[in-house]
Length: 107
Image (cartoon, rainbow, N blue to C red; front, side, top):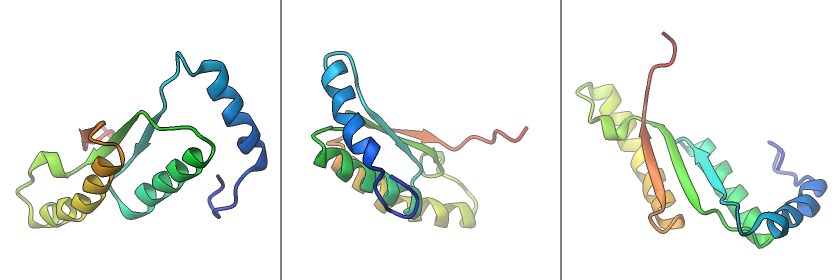
C-alpha cells in the first residue's frame, strides 16, 4: 500500500500466491511504533491483508516509552499517549504482541 492510501495492484495478486506457497512455514509479523500515524498505517495494512485472506500472526510494538516508566513529566505524557495504540494492537492481535522499549541508537 502506498503512503497516499492507494493500493498497489501487483501486491493484490502477489501476496495471496506467496501465502499459498508458504502457508505452512510462514508467519507474518507486523512491526509498528505506538504512535498515531505508524499504528494507523499498520492497522490499515492489516485490514488490507485480511481482505486478501492473509492474517498477521504477531505484532511488534517498537521503540515504546511506556514500559520504561519514565520519571520525566514530558516522557510520562508521551508514554500515556502510547497507551490507546498499545491497547488497540493488543486487541487486534489477541494478545500476540511484544512491546519493545525505546533505545537510543544514536550513539
